[in-house]
Image (cartoon, rainbow, N blue to C red):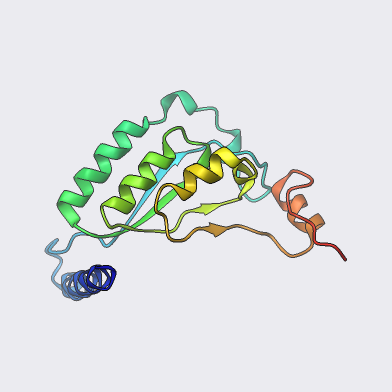
Length: 164
């Protein structure tokens, strides 16, 4: 079943690619997007020097997870399969994020979230992530030197240190 799903996505993305290329010249709005980015939260557990989202105090205005789930359904009904980028701050601090990811996986969306990985020091978060069916995740590192990484992230002791 997995090979058939992959083949279906390839055909869908391929057709959409050609329609998008043609539409680039025709300017008729023929093709739905093949990538969608959703900013779930500005919450973050780092204080990165290259980002100021953690300074925003707008958590009360965030859309609830239930609304994000409906948005995913609406997008899937319109587009079919697509690549989904879940953006933030640290998306794994968003209440309901595991349900959002689980539903995206169930819908067959291509998803690879980015995280600083801090929440996964907790068994609770790790178990929740593993229960979603997610196939890949990217962890953001700012270098192999722990001091450089910590300085960029604005917190000390973040990077796991390997024995020397």
